[in-house]
Image 1: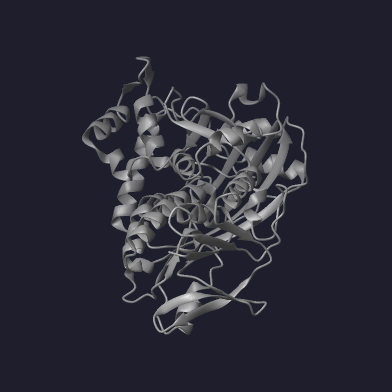
Image 2: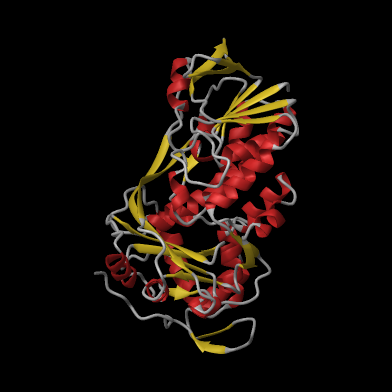
Length: 449
């Protein structure tokens, strides 16, 4: 392949370019924003001001695509830890049993991560990352896409065009202009609004733990994340389904007190604020079913949020995009029909989509199709989280699924089912052998403001 064009210079587009650089003579990444030389916020990445999770599988794949990236990020201030031993994972108001889990994680701001990926990709042979280059539409010859036309009127020819333009992708409309059907959409209407503030981090905050991830519950449909990041800072994002957390400090702290467990409130009520806070609203999780289309143009692909835009509170987007970039490179090397790529991407998306959709559909006010399977899985997971509060092996298995290392079906294997049933009845022993009463939450019930 002589030339590939990638639309969008966010994490998904940059990783797609890294994968394609091993196949194409030239790769051009086009973005409508002016791309800064420093790590600063820009219009096209509104999410950069909020907490971002990098899952274990995502870190693995990024390192495959850009060897040495982890070390470079750590040299710039990012730091690692054990995802089970060092992180407070709180589900149903209960903390997952901590223990060495042999799952390395990396704490890094979205700004630093995207900036370093952009620097690495821009330095790859044959790769150009061009800002202030907004794509207006596709050029084509019959059923073949031959390139893109910019708003400026310039045409850029390519043997492959990859849409990595995110939630706002115009691909469904472009397909209609070419005479092809648009993909069906699946939506889970979440009406999630969240607010983020940055605080000074002290070594003794949260007894030294660098992460709190707190899921919403049916009783309290509010969630929160506190992540340590470079520069001795905390980034804290709290959100509600159907209500909006305020940004002013006193109200932010009061809202944090209403979360299903006290950890984040204890942090923000004592920490020094460093900014004024910022809001974001996500109306829905959206999945476009490109793999079900009967026809699709040659020379065209779609990846990242343009295929599936998850509820961002789960932190899956960047990691899923990384795996999709790997699949994109494998597909482009074989020069096969787009249907094969979309089927491969669908297999990547299935597990995290099922996790997000099922978990959100537990909550009042969330609109979507509640199947019998979803209801059964949610009932099982509630019991699972009760047992995992004291069973470190269940905690390890849950985190491997949450970090996209294992499929959700791993939580239904006989050994796992046995531990859950045993944990829900009397006493559970974790890997340490300590006996504890099962079924009692670590945290008292909290009421919303």
